[in-house]
Length: 198
Image (cartoon, rainbow, N blue to C red; front, side):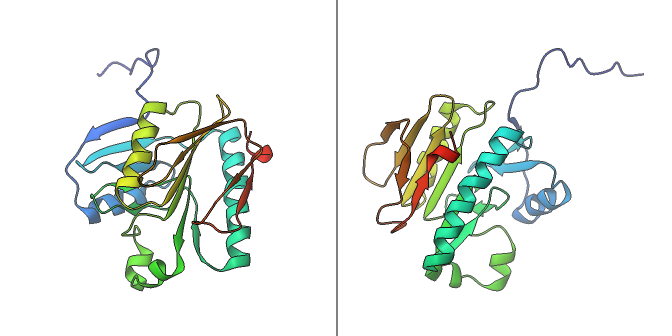
């Protein structure tokens, strides 16, 4: 009889497995295990993340709600929550904590493409770090979004009360404890109230 697993030494977070899955297999895996969050790197490594804790989850809702209220008013695109998978041009499958895609790019997709993991990189992404997230790994993910077509990315680090702003062809801008954040030309008129996030 096998001995019970020793849980005194923690498993790595996130758990990264080297599996060779087709796109269809990966999609089916995600559908079959909706209680987990999966991503896949451009080289095919499977990343398994646990659901977020309460503090991160409630702040993520406040962030996505503000973005969606702005988009409902402007009708400039579509807003997506952290459950949405995007297949980037480099082959990686990612799920930003919040994302936005311009209306023309979304409408250019077929209904079948809209039902599966979205086969494009969002125009705007947000990663809201949870206590278990690695800053180095999250920064690499932000750079990957930029390399694949994102026009604006925000990395929100609640622990340090810092925002890292990613734009194509520009150095990363770091703001400490701002109260608001503007979407600029990518999200015209959108201002995120960070008092609800900190």
